[in-house]
Image (cartoon, rainbow, N blue to C red; front, side, top):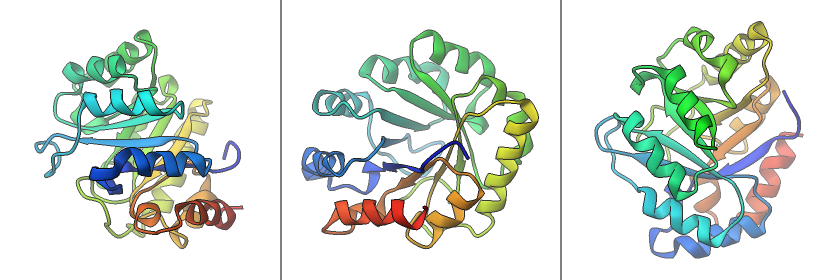
Length: 220
């Protein structure tokens, strides 16, 4: 929709014991973002990483950190992640008591702001906030675990989200997260996705640079 597709490898699928190695490898391959999935064991049935990991990532790379908060209390925790070095913070619409106020807080603290929506959340909710967003994150799986299958209705939801943006006269980045691979990536880019979050498709392979190159190629 807004230019060449951007690739954001999700470190949820990286080797935890060799995280720095894996991050450096994909950075050297020319990725655009590092996607950091934060899960609290409450909003989603999984527990992952925290601000200390974001701070450590910031020390080893200049690639922007795209932090996706899948947590119940984003109002309390957002400042932690911005202080740790997050460049983009995406919070779930479903978890926010006042999304516009939280977006304002993110901006005031110097980070970019995104809103994520789950597969069963109507895209119409974006009308409440899209005019103040830097990014819309459309989940193409139910959040919680890596390696899930892409939900077939996701391209239509992406198109609907883009429609909400057009209706508001704004152009935030459109990101899609979940089940992205060589088959699903072009389906998403064809309807206007700007940023593809790919975890298992990249980190399960030995030659990560080749995968990243091919993901860009299939979206041309």
